Length: 284
Image 1 (cartoon, one colour):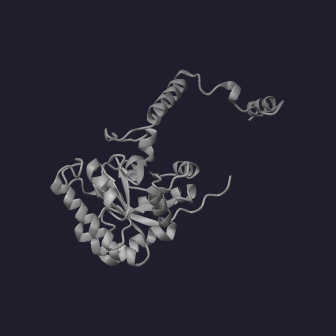
Image 2: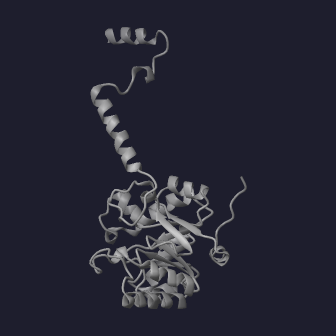
Image 3: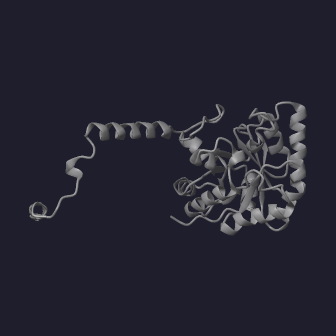
């Protein structure tokens, strides 16, 4: 099989121009990233749901950047060809412009192609500074999980005209400073469709309907293997959690009732050595 070319942002725009669907997946470990690579993913994103699902965080607000970068390294070992993006979790952007740029640079120095940010109007100067030093930024709009407390939960976004207009205004300000890819999470289908047809950037959908340039999903949700309840509007394509429960349950039962491990699968001493060992122990 011929090696895949490295996906660049220009390739995403080429696909958009041809009307070809762009497919992205969030990965948190080497196996899922390797599968995404093999399946031809255009974008692989190492996001904060990884530390939540694998390290047990109940909220993205408690995810530490060191955990995010640790997972990024695992993802980079599994995928090389897709556009590789690292999330910048809560407060890694916004404290100061210098710190925002330095934090973004840490991900790129490890091997990421760009970073993923949940911007606000006040963070536009930070986004611009990161882009100005040559680091691409994917903007995340609609439901912003890192601000769940501020927004009183995870209610779908852009469901009123006023809210949709405000989101578009924020996206446009991000476009003005160089953002070329926008991901909408649990945002009204009508808003995402309008953005896809009217804004000069790549528009992605995570639980925001089919009218987008690229479709995005989270690997553990795709496989049905999340430690937390998956939003009802996201579709799972497997039930790995149930498979693991069944397998783990069977193991515990077999270990307790003595049917595991089986003697025929055990290792044996070389011929005659058991007798020598028994004799040696008897005289010890």
